[in-house]
Length: 215
Image (cartoon, rainbow, N blue to C red; front, side):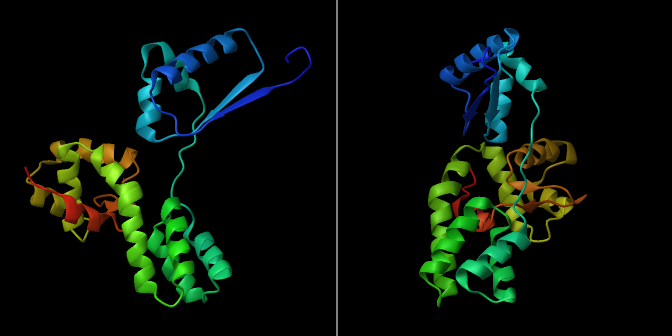
């Protein structure tokens, strides 16, 4: 392929740190050393990418360009809802805001609104149930006990003020900050506003309040 001026692009979705993925990444590193015209595009959750590149033999992945994807644009979501669901500007924006820019919620909420156009409460209820079952249960199961406790504090503190959350949890700033950073990296909370945090996943605060069990 190289002799004929061809290039090969390999695309891998939902990368995880498995033995097969480690073997492939090691082979790809050899391809690069041989100056072959091969390229790699991978997508995955932050913690999965991080776990893979932390492997001793695969640290070359640290040098690879990375793009962190944030929430979808609320205005663009609103325009799509207005066009596809035949909604007014106000209703389209209100529906888009419920998604918080979470791509899966954008699909799920749009689908159930399409199925129940005259019953927004029912469509939102069904969307919450679907998100709980197909996304949040998995996310919740992979969190540590302390991560869950911190999220419970965040869900309780409606203001989002870190000071209020720490008081609820009985944690010092030094205790709280590592969990805050970890949850930010996992895409569960946002910390762009100094002194405040908020849930990035729509309706996730309700899931946390319903499922947290203090041990």
